[in-house]
Length: 515
Image 1 (cartoon, helix red, strand yellow):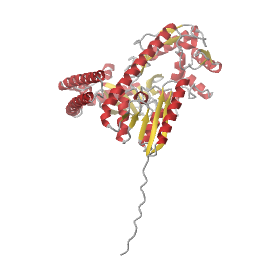
Image 2: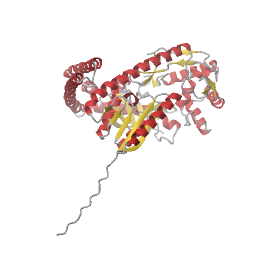
Image 3: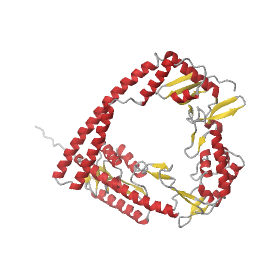
Image 4: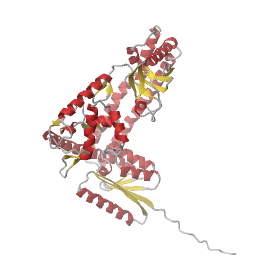
């Protein structure tokens, strides 16, 4: 008998790749020290564990925690997780990770789907134990409320500074820089460009032509990019160039989204706020010229949209570059041309289309519908109604499932309260929040039970009613076009598509006419 010794080699233990995430929201010196301290803390902590492998410390500096898209450090960490370089994440607290409840939970669940838990040091929560998700939701809500409270306090302080005219702008406009006190001071080289822009407009030059001249002279914008007509116009309508300052042109809503202030909040004008680059008289002359130009072309100032002066205004879209078509008066009549092609022919080759050709194509398209509504619109309407019924049932089922999940969440809350994981205040707050959500769900169920028609069905019914009773069209009607058409897409110079409000897009050939 021959006995041979079996030699076994110990299996190499695979180490856990651990990364950490840090964030500070301001650029103060003490915050820089805080960030460095956090980085050193996590780097040392990870290296103390023999079964952990250091996978990096990711951080964001001077960035708010209310949104995740703007945080490069966090996005880099998520990328490393997605490609398998990180197995476990450490972070200081929920509020450092994200102050937005939905974002926080979404990130946690995305990482858990990849089997990557997060450990929140301050709250002592490890998301690898999913009974902690409810606690995480509550604490994250509290972090968001804290953020909203801080935001309100900051906004109140900023508004008071605006009212007194002492508010300091974060980013000076082109032509200005800031001194050591944060006040706007003229930047000589850029100020000369600003004066040239205003002078050129007074001499009758358009904004796109000015942009082309600046690009040919290789003069960069503040962001080292190319000039455009809108960039030039942004300078022309900025009151800061005559030394004034309008405060609170924009505002942030409760969901941390920024909007242009069209009167929702007070705005404040400070005259003689800083040194002027051009005179108030020149600024006013330019505004009158811009206003006159806008009235001639049916453009609304501020919101930059066309009036309904012409039926096709702002509704014709280039199928090649996606830009809008602009109305032109030619020797042979009215035409519509791609804005990109007009000023940058190398960027878009789409040629103009005659106004009368578009109108003729619309009349042809409508007459086809009037003639064949039974073959086109009636089957489409029936299909929409069936699909809407299916979607309605699915929506009702989803809402009822949500009510069931909320009932289970209430039971989980009661268990946590009994085990004294939650105090009475947090327990009642979460119960109240769930009940409010249930009320909203019940309201949605009532609306769905009434089987309200969606917009496509309503628009199709309206178009179907028209085509059933209308006579063949003998000419174009502005009112009819506006009633039924959303957009016109120009695929080629001989083929366009009418996007109807009912959801259909119908193509028609067009006659190019004389070039």
